Image (cartoon, rainbow, N blue to C red):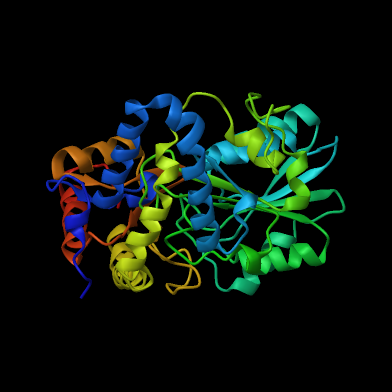
Length: 389
């Protein structure tokens, strides 16, 4: 039985929350520390923004670097992974005909970003089709690299996909890409806190992750990692005091992307507190128990929807997210009906010509939450036309 840690979350008690994946949820001790930072800023904003705050940021990056096994100087905080993807996509030296190799399972905001910059440069954002269900890592790697050409300049791939909830073999993809001399950018929005992320071992050139999802920090707390030899190519999205800085730091990367004038960066500062909270509660064990609950319910979930798993239900492909195809012509209305009639918060997501229902599990969830969802699905199937049979 999972250890009950629901007391640490601020979530409403009348809602069955099965959508941790979209925006996360901050735990009380970290949220309280967040508010303390905000209060300190308001009490003496000049000192905080120009003096103590940057020192806090340095300490926070050091803690995050230790957690991700990389140098703190190779990390910069950003509001969300989409912001990080924009930094790299805008600056990547694309020429007409160049190709970015990705999958057709990526996050919509990232697809839009790459499409935008590829269109401006005459390059091609190549969404390699992935046949589902997956059967093995080897099959996935073979499928993916069948889209490789001599024009490929960068591999862009999710660590864990959003809509389909799949954990992709980014370690194997990165290793093979490196053998072929390609740069690799991993979208790890769902990575840190859900699965182990070791950036030194992974060897990706760029990696972005959200701390406000599975690492339990307040909203608007994410990061971009870039290898030192590539940082000089990354001009800032917002040119501010870090450009031609009067008192430059040893890192142009940090100056360009961190020094942006007045903004509330308190959420960034809570990362050490979140890491401490996870360590105190043996979060590797918590995550393992959450995965067990996810796996335990996967087949029943698919059975209720008349679907099949998108991959083998094991740690290789499924962590704390699980998606199944659902037959519905009105996914947005179905989502609203689940919330309004059953008080269940669970995403119903379009992806191409398919729709997926995805549940995600964290330390506050129990089997009761899944049973509530199952009962609601059965009730909706019997009483409405939202779910096609």
